[in-house]
Image 1 (cartoon, each protein chain N blue to C red):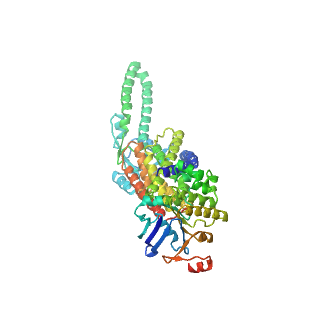
Image 2 (image 1 turned 45 degrees about the horizontal axis):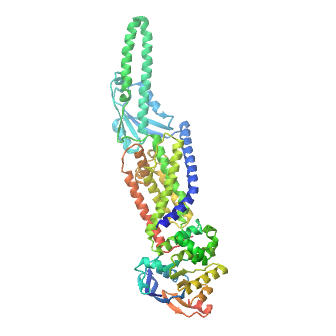
Image 3 (image 1 turned 90 degrees about the horizontal axis):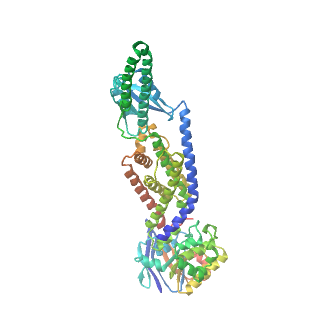
Length: 397
Length: 222
């Protein structure tokens, strides 16, 4: 089988001459496209709304103003639509999918904060809310920081107002007291603004989510490059090898492994391109390997059952495209209805994205096992197709 | 050397394609299997080559059973399927490297089978650039690796030009003279003349036929 492996690697080398530049071009186009999409969305008025429920009417005009500010996160291109609810109503709305999450602001939140007390905001969400949790947490902290900045200015204003009446020393003493409280307050502000995430632990950031989704999409598309090599493989060679006593399953496994190797090379190009274009996104080759195994198995399945190149390309392209779209690899999955989200979670594309985001945020999940299971199932079905073709004595082009 | 096939059977679902096929051949003989399209000629050769499994029967050379000994069969039987079992994007040399070791390849190109087939003249060319005749010669060259004493050819000269047919016929004559047994399926008159015994495969049964050059009678018998 060594000679057959070498011959197949030689074929792969010839396919990669075209596949690598195509992958590099695709990476550049998609990265630029993604960047343009995010920039464009942030300027549009009619942005996608992310509905969030608010429980407990804020008792401060400043906080109400702050919450309104969160409703337009210009930097991210997504808007938060806040709706006020009672806790029971919010729970029902979350269950029905009317809102994606709800925050419970405890009574007297701002006045307690002014006294330096820590009251926790509870943020209740379901799984798959993704980076919006992180965004919400960051924005609440930012608003409290802004409140503190204004308070600091106010304390200096108070000193200026008091000094003519109570003298320099007394005004300084009052300012010091203020400053002491303020310093304590500043140190505590992250805890004051702490958001308790229920239902989701350490969800990935939005950029991480999109990078992972993009990586899965590109991984799926990369396998298109190997369609000619795989579909147009002359089964006559395999037939002759079988007549020479070489196992047809062994030959087909080598075909798969060569396709997998090609996929790995394309993913290496992709990672290089992404790391050069967006240095803050850290993706390594290691977590991509199970994804490459699944994608190669899916492509191998499509290519093994099709006799014509066009049929193989179209079957794989539409399968990959539909999967990338439905599984939230091209657009955040939490914008889809609950039923689609549930479907995406069990599809191989969704598992690949989930596995990658789990890996990126240092979590361990079951997505890896799902991916490996899909890889094994696709490979088994592909082998059935290949072996059937060889044993039937069908000779290709 | 004696080749014997006894009681060979093959059916697809409920349709019997080959029924109790019996055949024997001696060293240096060339046997033509004739039959209409879809009569099972290619199936018979692919079973003898080990590509497909028979439902029953035996295939032996000098009493050694080949269906039960895959490695022996692969050493003794060379097979050229109907299409060209070649990788089009690679060169003729790359394709041959799949079947020959580097040393064997050089030896055969110097004065062996590959030289006889005239493969040296296009050894560095890509298969996709070769003519039909060159491809067929290369296919035979691949099948002849390790010099098997039995050669199965499925319509070897179909759609080839006259010169190619003559080249291949010359090679097959030389192969027979060296003691090889050739079993081929064909519709070509030139190949019929090359053979010394003829069989017609019809309704799954193989019956001997005496070819006397009368193509009209042969066509009516198929």
